[in-house]
Image (tube, rainbow, N blue to C red; front, side, top):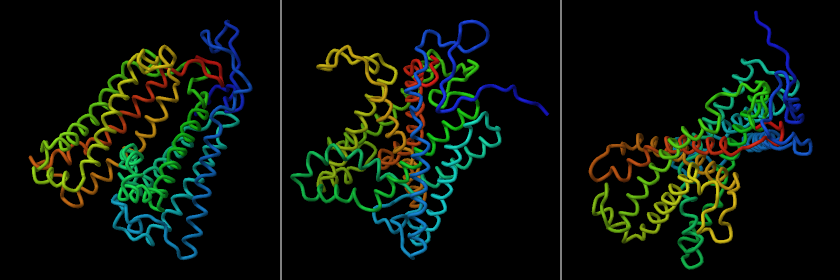
Length: 389
């Protein structure tokens, strides 16, 4: 049996002591000292996750016990995910169980590791529970969330003039889409909370992830993150570009990976609006993804009137990219499952444009998430909680 060397625990509340410059203490390497007034940065994530899942679990349990049905599965007319054909009455109690497991996991992530290191088995169990809840969230969501994000710019412009588009926008506020948004939001909070718990339990700063002993993994250094982050960003930009090229080609009447009859039908049914909206959204996203490793992603370029030369706020890049990465994963998985169920995954001359790009969406999600994390690693600077950096 081995015993670990005792060390002062790093919690969300207590900043790490600054190094005196002698001995083996951690060095701030020129970073500012920890500011007690800012030591609570990020502490809201864990209690928010616990409250989110607890309230959701109670609500789902009440609906179950009163014989009601949540807008999930077949009870959501707009759903086409992995569980879209399962009766809502069947899924509702399982959603309640999922939410209660999420609540218990979030509470553990919130309260664990406050008084010292947490055993590796305990951390692994919490991560496993988070993975199970995340898998349930992915199964209950689909591509409709991403599609609505893509349609949003066009919808906001045309809704005042087109009653059909206005009605479609109102559908976005229905019980089904809002339930999916709640699940995705809760899943994101739970993952973030567990991540902070694992850091804290391993003796690192919950906010920035830097270890108290200075033995940070080599791949987290700015130089290393720049290398692998660039590769991830290029992959994350290439996939939506591939998708955008096919959709914009259809708008122009070019049957790229699609039958001429289907392209003509798009024009006749005003389907070009959807194709242009999704294609344009994907293309803009691809260009912005390149900013995760380009200079203009850190400093506003000259053409940014009123902002030229100023530093780009880290959150301005990280938050939107994270939202898209989260939305893309269930979208890609649900379309793949739908394709298997309806035998539509064959890549023929008249179908590869419709099917091929979506098969790569899970890779897009993971690559974009990695590129975003690399961007954050490069630009995080000195931690406002522990003072390291």
